Image (tube, rainbow, N blue to C red; front, side, top):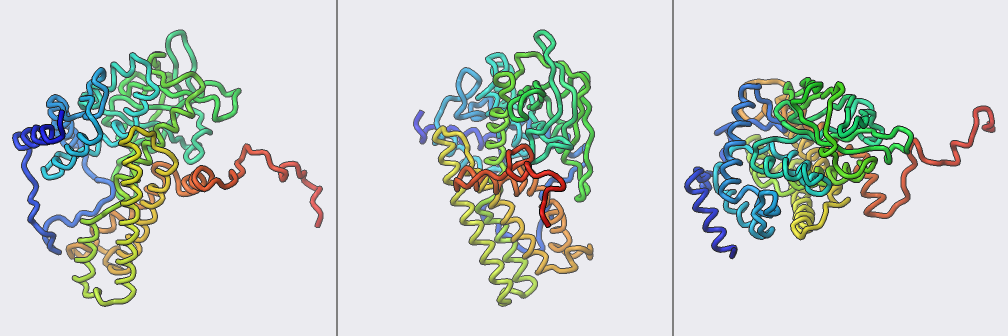
Amino acid sequence: MEITEFTQQAKSFLDANLEPKETDKKFVWGEGSDNMSMFEEKSREAEEAMVASAKAWRGKKFDAGFGWITGPREFGGAGLTASHEKAYAAVEANYKVPNQSIFTIGLGMVAPTILAHGSPQAKEKFLRAMWRADIVGCQLFSEPGAGSDLASLQTKAERDGDEWVITGQKVWTSGAHYSDIGEVICRTDPSLPKHKGLTGFLVDMNAPGVEIRPLRQMTGGASFNEVFFNEVHVPDSYRLGDVNSGWGVALTTLMNERAAIGVGSGGGEVSMMTRISAMVRHFELENDALVRDMVANLYINYRVANFNNKRAMDKMKAGQTPGPEMSISKMALVNNQQLLNDLISHVLGAKLQADTGEWGTYAWHQLVLGAPGMRIAGGSDEVMRNIVGERVLGLQKEPGIDSKSPFRELKVGTQKN
């Protein structure tokens, strides 16, 4: 189908189902909502309503042929090109679309992993259902003792005929409480080196033995969860990739995760800069040399990150797998967030900490408190730097706890004073 005809069909569909955005309305300091939360802090009731609205819209969009534009036809996709997807996104951006953030992990990270590593049965069962929003997916990687060092995880999966029995604990799982399936990495052979004895699975989040507990953050919300697996049975058809080849499966997910996090938030924050500029003018600091320098530095870094993200997205749209360059996007996101926090703190001072009721002041504290989480999500800063150093710059691998080192040959009492 030609892009022009496709775009017209998309516009007709959107006109019939959504309200257009008010494109000519300009931001005015003191008007509208001043909520600047990094993580949406909703009550469970409000969250349930958001999930229902998000699912309803994605289902309608999928049934109209716009739900998985580049996906294979045999799994429910439209089989069209990245150019068609880009054209649709450009048109949809002009309409008021229900919040779709609940699908970021499932469609941005889990679904691509199923497509790459899933069994024929898993692809048939889950891909269409996920893209149509009949089910929502989450990612179950981190553990209390295995965060940045994911390969140290201890959740185990033991073979039992045509099934696997999973026992263990995962933590920091976003959206587990409204998800239907989860991608989990387990240890299947403890006798092998830690990277070699892992296997990936898809698990029913409503299966017997799965317990989900919310984690309260310092922002006041509970966007994350800890998940316990007490002898949860999973069919072998839900296995991702070969047995003990789970590290490669995990890397596929992590690269897509960093793409979703970095590209989704690291670049051209035009609306953010508009709000920042209005705040600076409101407090009559537009001629302050330090503030002007901080604003300019923030804008420049946003623009550079945006260019890098576009390069990465073009690579993905060309059918290439996200690589270590996505770690650069993640690092840029965190760096830009710190620059933003420093500027906000400098301009607002005590107003950031004390709620005086003044519009556009205390509301920023939710963003500042939520920012440290981005230093961990998708891989810690230290892990990102190691990836870039080793896989992009070609530097020597940093010694790890299980690395061979001449220093390990030293014995207590042999050192010379």
